[in-house]
Length: 200
Length: 200
Image 1: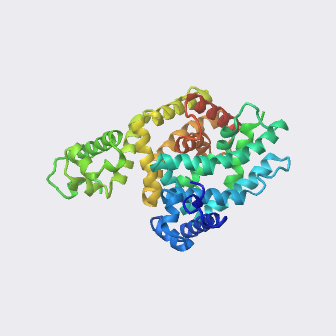
Image 2: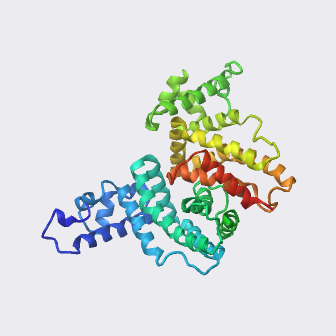
Image 3: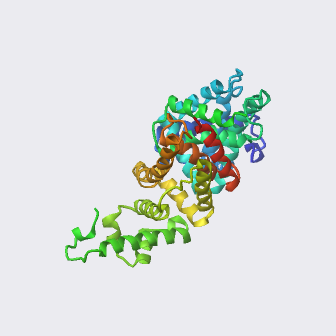
């Protein structure tokens, strides 16, 4: 369901979108403040100043709402995509440093761990995470890989998802399993190794 | 607590170890058969033919028991470690194909997803997974990397954990997030790319 106005045809245009944005912002704010079990639909509705029924008309459960919130926030943060200075290592290094910084933020860390749990427990949420959170990220990387491929900087036979995983998976693995320190130096080294692996 | 005999000094030597092995086997068998919420301490005790109190004396909760079970099973499966034919790509390819096959097993897949959830929700279990499941795997890889380093096949400046993550993280990421098909061809390509990245 894309619009509350289907249920309430007299609602002014834009009201539904404002309620949606308020709910997404409230969900992110609460997830940064509270342990995940306390980030309930009730709490999100109260913070957003909307009725709980309004939330449930759009999202079947808080997992769906939170995936949407993360995707919404990522889309806003992505701006014009991955920079293209012509230097693939430098551009990917800048991206990975932002990723490392985000994961170091306790509120964001807690929210993303909670989403991983939701995705592992419920394959429907897993599919939603893939489609709404990862696919847009992969598309941003794919644009940058296309330029690098055209410039002869990476092996044309490596697919976008494979190249994305080469860059992101070591950081994700270290973040999730805490196998070691996750800092800029680690992200930088991951990019250097990935670009060596991707070289033609 | 390492031994039930602390509580029952008259227990014959070996009895505690038999109870432990029975509990670990029962836990793995149940986790392969039942949805994780049904793999309770009660169910494991019943299958193992031991009292629930016996389980709780050794493991504070089923998460701890299951990590132990996976570690125990991995130790048995590891045998003499990663083969060393002198061909690093071939040897790591054989290992990753086994990993891919394991993850394709529905029972094992479900158990490992459940353990990921436990580790994400509880940092104590996370630390236990790292110590009992990942550290021994990293040690096996480290032995093989040492030989490869001595043979001048990999860059001496890359640490064992970093090299391990280069090989394992893309498979883990694809398995957990279902970003694409996880088959031997993918594992093979991951090894080829990792070895390019690790070359001196």
